[in-house]
Image: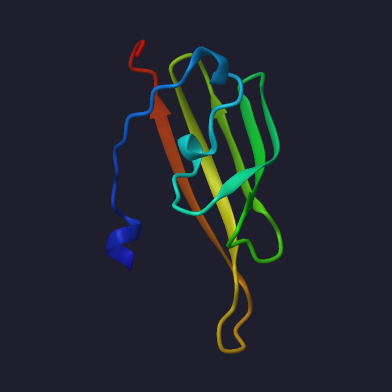
Length: 103
C-alpha cells in the first residue's frame, strides 16, 4: 500500500472551452465511482469544492487548492470508515497539473 501511495501517475485531459471555469470531477479526482460536485468555487486563484461520491461515509469528499494561468494544485480529503470498531479516519492526497497547450 505504501508503494502505491507514493506512486506518481500521469494523465492528459483535454477540456472544452466551456469547462474552464468548472472542470469535470475526474480532472481533480480520478475515480471509477460516480461522483458529482456538491459545491464548487474557482475564483481569484483558489479552488474549493465538495464532492458527492457513492463511497462517502459521513462528511463529503473535500477539495481545496490554488491555480494560475499555467498550473493547479489540489488537496483531496476523504473520510474513511473505521473497521472492526476502529475510529474513522481521513485519506488526504494532492494532485497537480499544468497547461500544455490547446487540444
